[in-house]
Image (cartoon, rainbow, N blue to C red; front, side, top):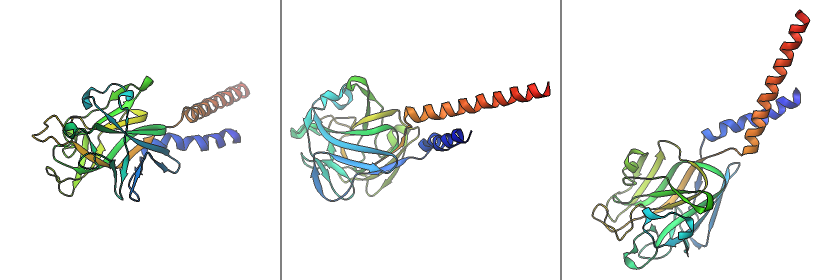
Length: 246
């Protein structure tokens, strides 16, 4: 019994862990990087790479389409992509630059709960994909603009100046945590060579990601097995008491 209780003492906190989201911050010392890895102790390790592509952002179907290597630009507050007229994550293909995306890979399943983006203009949109089997891209939305809360799918707290070609910061909290994946693709919904709200520009920088880490299957198995053993022991005790009473 004491061993069972000890096992349950380890397993029980796991069931509560997804309720509190951890936050990964991507800013740091100024640098250009091939990849960026960030760890939250006891949660998960995230690795970010930048890729270019040529398809319309809304028509991406597989991660293999993100075939062009790009370089991450890191400053104290955020990361963007080197190239073009600025170092945002940009889909403005009018300048001849490839459209850009971040591929975010975790060592654990994540359920995204929020994201903070900077250099956000009034017309900027966000497109997010989960990466499924065989690299298939599963669209997770969204409609509307970043600063407008993605058509009601998120709560946006905007700071700084949010207006055309200026850019402030939008902290988005998803109204419902997003589907669980180990890999996500972050880009925009409309290409920069397609007018959106009267402007060609589409881009932003990535500050932070917040997510709940999904417990590993082995941990759930331990928890379920523990409850099963408790139930079995209770049944044995009831049987023994019934025999004594008889």
